[in-house]
Length: 317
Image 1 (cartoon, rainbow, N blue to C red):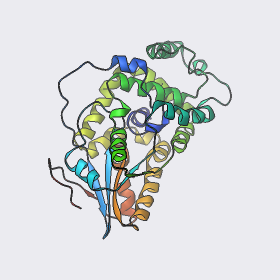
Image 2: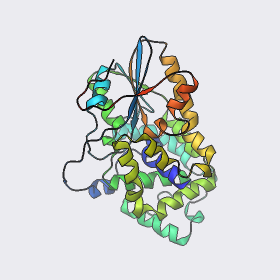
Image 3: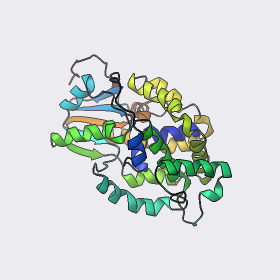
Image 4: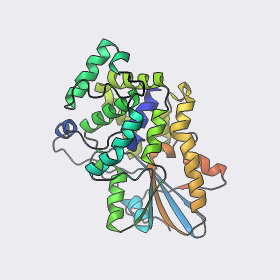
């Protein structure tokens, strides 16, 4: 449970928590450092006679490492349509205008209970320290449901490690698409992603929040292997890191990944009926492991193949 929720919070659910960087995250970002190594994330392709669909796995919050090059850039440049999980406005004010009504509807505890009443004294102390680091008062999130507090704290902690949604592939790709007046499509909505977390049983939400508080100082150690696996295109390794606690809650895993993957595979099946070249960018967790999008496509008798990495090489069209 704990690593599955961590994976979802940090890498595979960009719309379910505030996307705006906090002042604390901005001030805590690392100073200038040596250039980061080039990342070579995995990509697949699905084809028929007149349609090509690239499947690119993203890491929603990144540092400044380069990745938008080689076969990824060539595939994107050859595409006339960008598909992402959710179309999130880039401007913070527009993000908040979209998010806040949903927060008020889904994230406030409907029974008026407080988070602090369901945590131990030590956990409340850890929560207050975390909120203080964000410049927020201790009571700022007390009336919210545990899942929202967990996602907020985990995303803020990731930003303090130098990761930022503005460096994430979705943001980069959408800016590039805007420059080309490229058609953009969303597979889901922000509301549908938030509802997945809101539907998590209360005790599981509390488990995730307690784990986030207990392991806040160790976040870098837990996140680093996932980021390394993504950067080096090790999809099997990424799946292994995500699925270590799979047996603990198959229902939650299916809600976060398998069921959505099945929906997206059906979207791809329908999209293949129309000509064109599509660049589809979704969280890398959906393209790895049991029940992945590729597995779901196989069940529909649709083949996918890994696009080989060759520096500077053009993707075949």
